[in-house]
Image (cartoon, rainbow, N blue to C red):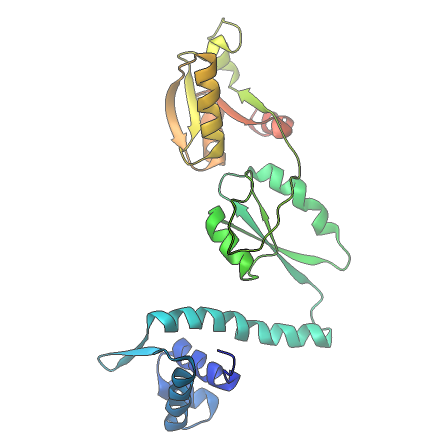
Length: 256
């Protein structure tokens, strides 16, 4: 790919984006024959087919789809880069990936100072699996990842992680529910209705180990991938739940 002609890439991207050589030719003010010739030259350079015929339509090959995604980054960023150089953009975009099980009030407390920066930035938060976020970080689609677990070792991706803090865990329950129990903590949890995050959550695994160590068998009445939904069920008295002690005051205030 060392000698790839960026004009050829741009022609390929335009065809892929608009679906036909004819449409791309109209946009680029070139003949369809010129466009087709340039794409063939690009295919020869990289040694891969970029399109496949499907009836009268051109569809991206598997390699073509991958190349198109890279071209999206290249050519969508071009106008923004020119604006930055000319001083037309006042806000820089700060893109943060959030792993699926990180608590949102903690995210806000960590990122809130960024909103006070001068010059101001535009904050973009994208939630996803840690694996997909690491892939986006390695492609410079993200500037930062916030996660409640350390990054797994990956020799193919050069990333760094830093512990920002630690928190204990607090058990929460609505007042009507907790009034039904007279045993001391943690014995009161044995057989009590409990709301848990789903099995893929690091918090779930930690809790199950702790329950086993304490010889407790709570009655699991609900499992949730969405932390806010879990907390809403807890507020309604459906069961006891756990959240980081760092946001204890916020949970008690917001959910009574």
